[in-house]
Image 1 (cartoon, rainbow, N blue to C red):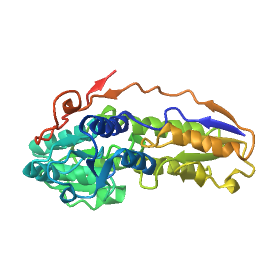
Image 2: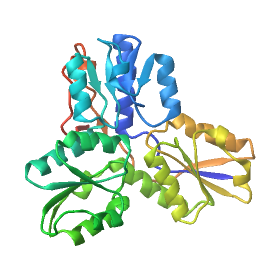
Image 3: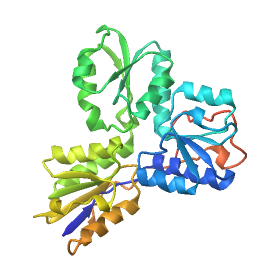
Image 4: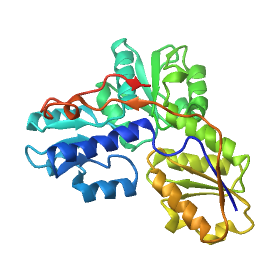
Length: 324
């Protein structure tokens, strides 16, 4: 059996930064540290950090007074930040800088008097955080049909931002519908949409042209991992989302000569290797990797982890800062 690995796959820079914030916090301040919601959407990552001493909670009132507190990579609403400040909690913000950039863009549009539209999925933590950051009404749309139902005049000054786990390809139809619907519309440049999401989706499309079966390593609650599987299905390929090698179904492999293998942006490479080992239990396997984009972006850690102590004042990233 031939296994072809997508390039890029797995961890993006925002996920690497978020996980490192938890790890370094544990090293510097000792266990436990408290993380509001899953730091990233991957069960294996969360369980490993729990073993190291991280405690994951749903709400701030579950965190003891004075305990080191970390906000997840998906970002939080301003009301959560205000609650943490009111309690004097020492906070480290693991919000992905690209998510923080969306927050800033949205605030700027609103400050200029534009109605703001957010392209994203209701209930996703990033969407909830973004809507809670803007400080004004936000109109959430997911589909072209949602655009037609917007209760805004055609000539209203309007702007849009997007959930970062949606790619240029994911949002193209909705953005086109917005342009058709409104006369005065602004939005971010294509280059401002999350590079990691677009790269991983483009790699999967290339992979599907060569494979008989697509396996995506990622958690069920990972938006970007689910989207990778959906792309495989759209390409006419049997496609499955699995957490690790234990979920591999031998029935999927009948008649398959070439397996395409990728991983969502919150899935560690060790789980990809685990799936390869699971495939090897069903026969000889050769592994190769597609040529693809080589990502070398790194995001800076919060200053508190470089020096000093975490403070009650919550540090906020205002734009993506990349060290190449």
